[in-house]
Image (cartoon, rainbow, N blue to C red; front, side):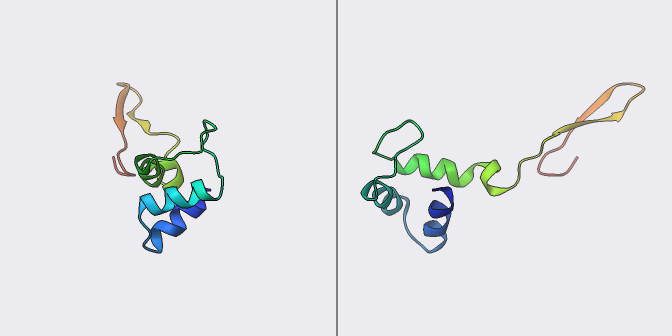
Length: 77
């Protein structure tokens, strides 16, 4: 279902059209509902896990003697 949402979005379809298409095909939401909101599809498109930007270890120790922590943002320190 996520691949379909991305495909239709990249082909130029609106979120409303995609939501209606999923409803018409009887594809239920994770909560088991038939009705989808375009805002939910937008959240799926922006989810870092689906995009591929998820980092497992978002912090690291820059100076282990002083226990100084740094946080990585978007792959940069």
